[in-house]
Length: 447
Ligand code: MV4
Image (cartoon, rainbow, N blue to C red; front, side, top):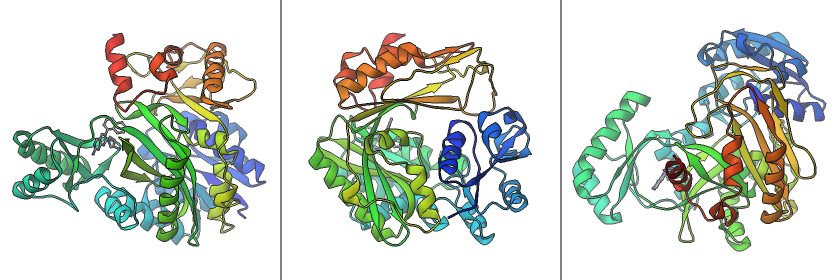
């Protein structure tokens, strides 16, 4: 087991990882920018190293500073959290070259999944159902027309270096195809330095359902069920739940089994998320994330398993603490992302939190690094906390969520809490009847 873990992140996830380290008796080092000197995780860590000025590129993305902080403090492993360097293959490689363990998959696995064409090809080879489309990059118009005619319109053009919604163009008919292909490729080249694009059948009203997987690096893989993350705005998730209101136990076991086997065959190590679009009872792979995700607590709530413990165990070579048959799904969990933003326009609202009071009671978890008197710096993303609610079933979970939202007080800044108070009383949400476009349509109607 590791003696000392360096946490290369900030905010609620830095605190989340720190808590797991403490439980495992592992010493902690945090690195932080000058803007985060007063952060909760900096106060709670055994050691802290200031690695630079506020801009991420000079601090949380500065690989050399982070490696130096490992050397100075004698950390034997790095937990990257999510965002920042968590899916940076070069960072994983550099740490390995310094005999420091990256708590995550190999640089090569990160690289494969970061290239969306390569990721899709790999998924298909491993037996994961993918969206119908081109086999690889599409360069010429004639080939594009042939593929689009074969799969049928509408189609979507995606950048291989994109992901998370960046660099996509929809062509409703053949008349749109030439411009869509040209602009997608030009924009991808400018944004990512890679102009490769691919074509897929455009699914019009899918849900976003993702499967939590783990590999032990020795050829074993398990799944921890799915999360439904369909409620998004501009590709930012707002509300996530497990299990998906749309799936039954048979569908869960089927897609989960496919994913676990794929992870085993890939020889993957650590936490991963296999993302699907789900429409008319069918799953279609879109991307794989090779990190711990923001919404991991809903999976923890329904399985009772600490996923950060599992990441640390696996990275240290100790394997998973559970086999597939030990992973049982219990009840229902919902996560609300509390952002320091206007609840209608989503404009960031940094500033000082004058009063912060979190709800409690059975089935309530709040993951947050903020406190009364804390000043939210303007440099980073606006997530200030997550409310995670668990109940024996979805109805109980929703009842408890409504009550918890009533108790939650965040004064001094705007937050997304009022949006959740509206959503929890909405009939479609109560019925689990929503797709990836539901939230944006709802927000447009409310204006
Ligand atoms: C799609 C799609 C429809 N058809 N692919 C957006 C984020 C990126 N991960 C993939 N995305 C989409 N890919 C096909 N073939 C619709 C989306 C999409 C979306 C997906 C998940 C959650 C919210 C979304 C909002 C708009 C579009």
